[in-house]
Structures are given as structure tokens and as C-alpha cells.
Image 1 (cartoon, rainbow, N blue to C red):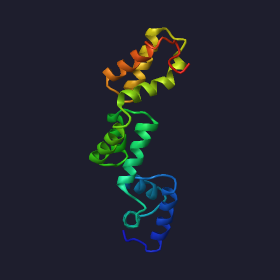
Image 2 (image 1 turned 135 degrees about the horizontal axis):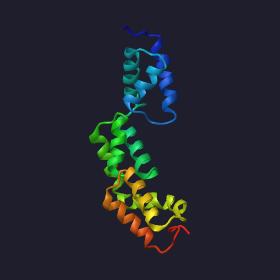
Image 3 (image 1 turned 45 degrees about the vertical axis):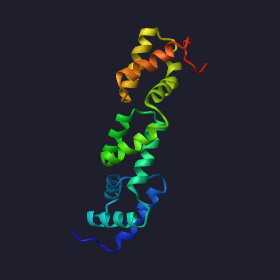
Image 4 (image 1 turned 135 degrees about the vertical axis):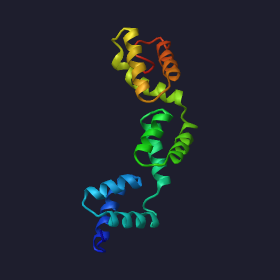
Length: 166
């Protein structure tokens, strides 16, 4: 396929509109532009130009995704790295950014904070059922069983049936 020089500015404009909302990995941007009907050559030239112009940066993308997954969504380090890898970031960049965010927001704190938000919904359940739901919830977010159990025990021992937010 030969790239059409007239389609590169259209692809560039489409990519800039996407980047105005959030950062994208190269793989994500390729998929978005392909869905808009651009050729592989046009997409490659467009992304190369965006990178050269400083509009796309894998480092910024990794930083943004790590913040979203670790701080906002309160996922475990392992789950955050895996999701970043699935989006097209290399594993080392993902690990580095997640580790950097983890220095200020420890996994145990994230597990507890994620659980605190759900705890009131489980207020009327008996302790065994509440513990079972909480444990599954934290494991699905990628937390190790020991971290999950410690977070549950911390909330259970707080003495309040609805958790520490009352």
C-alpha cells in the first residue's frame, strides 16, 4: 500500500482530537486510526510525526495510565502492570511507573481504600458473607491474598458494621 500524502494531515488532525482527551499508546492510536479507515503507512507516518512533534509520548502515557490505575482505580501493582501491558506499553515502563506511584500509595492502603468504598453496600450481610465478597472483590483487583485478608481484618476490627466511613 502506498500512503496518500493528502490523508496524512487528516489522520494527524484525527489523532490530535483523540489526544486532546487523553494519552494513547502507539498500539491504541494505531487501532483508532485504522478504525477510521486510514492505511497502515499513513498511520505509521502520522504516529511518527506526532511523536516527533511531542504530541505522543510513551513515557507520558505510562505515567498517566499508572496514575489512573493505581491512584484512581486502586488496583494492585500486578493488575495495573498487566492492564498497561495489554494496552501496548512495554512491561518495564509499566513496572517503573507503577512502582513510582506505589511509593506514595502502598498496596495495603489501596486495598483498604478500595474496600472502604464497597463496605457500606455489604453492611446488612453476615460477617462470613461480607468477608467472602470483600475477599473476592480484592482478589479480582489483583491483590495478593495476604493483603486482601489484612484489609478485611482491619475493617472488621474497626468495630463498625458499615466500616470506618460512618
